[in-house]
Length: 152
Ligand code: ZN
Image 1 (cartoon, rainbow, N blue to C red):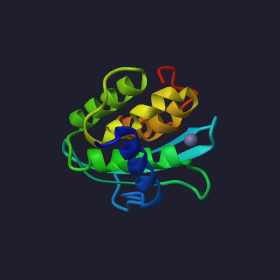
Image 2 (image 1 turned 180 degrees about the horizontal axis):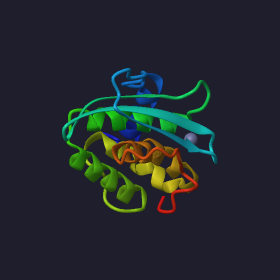
Image 3 (image 1 turned 120 degrees about the vertical axis):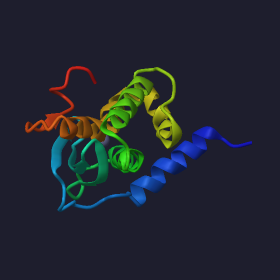
Image 4 (image 1 turned 60 degrees about the vertical axis):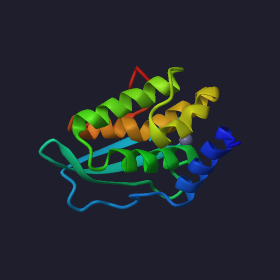
């Protein structure tokens, strides 16, 4: 029998050690910065949007400025939304946020973060990349922080 908790933990560890899309995207036409002062996580997100589609995406975190949860979440987020429409990406953001707020699990590998629900102080770590994505897609110029956003 597969231990889901174990599987989820492995997924998070894997994406923390080998983050996907961990690069600056020179062709980005949307960017956003996000920070989670409670943990010290900082992310710089680069998105290339073509029409209504996220054709490429990358992120960077300054050395030491991203905990395992925030980095793994950013990695999984970029994997999940690459090639998707803006509307689909926003739907995933909603599903992810709902899951962490106690709702049903988000689809696919994003469910790996369902265990974070039990650790309220880490929810902002998991949400950080998604809020940065949302800000980038809104083309918001202002940096986002997990403290100023009221609906975390
Ligand atoms: Zn963190």
